[in-house]
Image (spheres, one colour):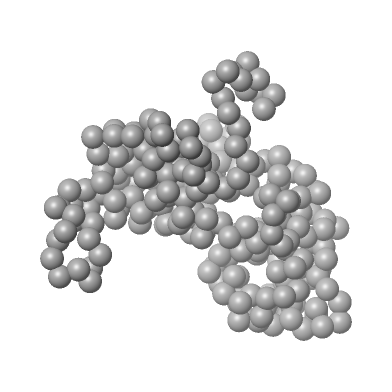
Length: 246
């Protein structure tokens, strides 16, 4: 807000998930001439121990992007079943030892809840049977964060919701920071660019064979080396763009 204070006549802040923007009366009435979604966690959130996103030692496990909403990481690790935890680590963290880690967490919480980053890392040590690398820790903490914030589900709702309020010729740009979200964006843009968008179970075409728009990026745009040098956290960024038909 401080950075944009000089533009306060032209800027209006909205607190909520991406998909909620389409519910705003002004947005629905006027439409959007463009939309830009910067997914994932901000550097401010990552650097703040109080938010619980980091695997630095002794940090309380929270991981909520909006601390006024939902259950935190501690609640997830305490309540989710072994099967649910396995799915979280496998699907959102692509962790080969997902089942073993889930089993270890369930075992540990029977005697003491997992409250801090140290507790989760200790379970990971047992599951991997070695000291985890920073990449190992990052995958697991990412998986828990995605599950806590329902990031994939939110993105799947946000994309079509924002598409519906784009004006003709408007461009939607999305930056994703991991392959799971990027895949959701890629598939959505691909489906919206098809000549026929009828569901596969329809016996005949009812959409008149007119695509909703076109994908502007055949492949995701990746950061240049000098951009990564200035901001190391940009190294995993993938940007895609789609334009609504005129």
